[in-house]
Length: 467
Ligand SMILES: [Mg+2]
Image (cartoon, rainbow, N blue to C red; front, side, top):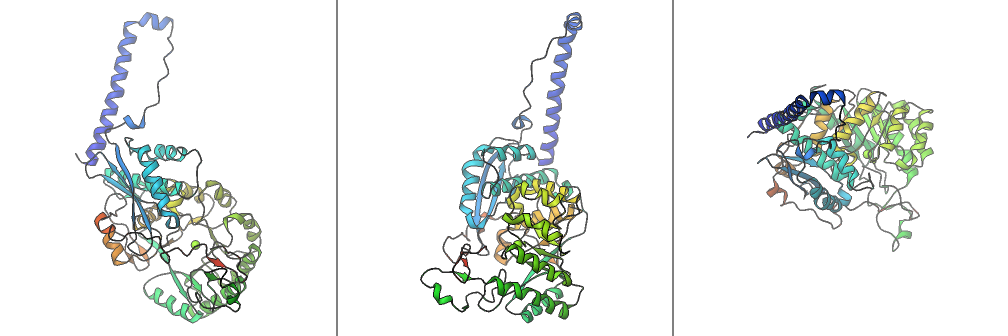
């Protein structure tokens, strides 16, 4: 039986069951008409319909698949159903704690979900969310997000439609991307930005390193020696970061790029929460003259109280949210019109279901979407961004990291970039599959330097810094 036929049959059976209950009640009332008319009998309370009994389709298994075809640990959730060959995929990647996410999926959500109807996505979302009693937080939300995406993938396959059609259809032809350009000097950043522009990118995130200083997104200074570094030897290892050198380098970079590239290219920058809040406000004011498309994460999530001060000072557009996992973190920032772009990580905040709600909320306040889409997003997660980007009117821009040949082999149907944009395929659901045999050839590793550099950034006196 095809998935579409199965859906229709399920709906017909449910209708016939309801019809049967109605006919039985009508017969009862006909036989006791006078008594019923004189003295209405209270009806016993009916239990709410069980989601698991609505249709024949059931979730039979849920499991995490760990793989690293690009040297970055990825976690994909596979939800299998009682219909042969019908399954869904979702991205649950939290690369820094990935084995915990796999345990949350395999040991907690799988037994909770087996036997349930995969059609009731919202109901299952709320049930999974409540099932741990303590809610939100990384790990549990990643696991939930992966399942949520997989359920939407199943829904699209059952409807025989690409997912964006179920989300409301197209608002645009393709999904414009921003790409990452970094270098160890302003000239190197300019050269690489020109190469990206020639490939068709209209949005470019620029980061520059300074000698001996590991700035976020720019490897130019990484590993080189800042004066005084030898004093830390024997005490700490890792990279050194000097906020003063970084703070002063950014306006110089933008002055150089606007002079060299002109005003018509959209430029972005990520502070990555590395400055003291008042220094970040000063940087935003100084950058206002260079008309950024957005400046990302000027503050850490712990410092969101500074956004109102920042808003009163300058009109540099602000993007925020990649570290959020709790609705209380973004609702007031959006409704207070304190940010311009929402940057949540879909595989962290609750999957497609929550992303749709956030986007809808943002739409009332002039805030656009710019979902977090770096290399620690699987091609399944990138596909989710396409369907959300196509169907969300208040879309802003989408981050994307290139997928190498191994990644494309493991994930057939992985999105392709053309002239700086992503386009959806007409395959039903998310449109991306996984070859589990090939995925197993790229096992994740736990040893440094396999993406375990987090929590090792220090100031010049050895103080641990934000990543
Ligand atoms: Mg970021």
